[in-house]
Length: 133
Image 1 (cartoon, helix red, strand yellow):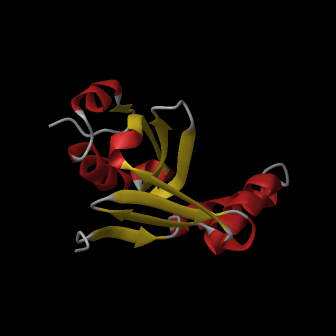
Image 2 (image 1 turned 180 degrees about the vertical axis):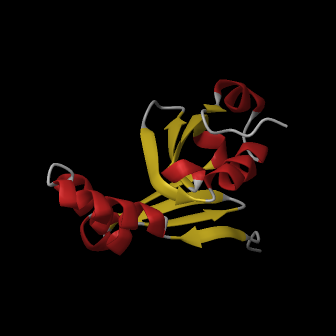
């Protein structure tokens, strides 16, 4: 019997990240940032479910990283684009990190993930863009 897995978010990076970086490309010095955002827009996909977080990326979307919530030791978020999107760094118990750049609705996504974390991971986590209740 398979356990049901509900999809919370299935998306690519926020489109605002791409637009902002294209505008910044006119300063010439930001061209590497623009190239990075174009590559993310083309090939990075986020999938957050009730059981795991999956990030597909790399050249032509050929790399895939899956983590389950019990592996997470800490999460840090940083707002970008005036808070419309944000970056999230997930640190795993083995010390490795998974970065989710230009994550749409990052505050809501953080709250969804935080509900599924262990108490120790919740206490270690924090966010610079967290809305206090």
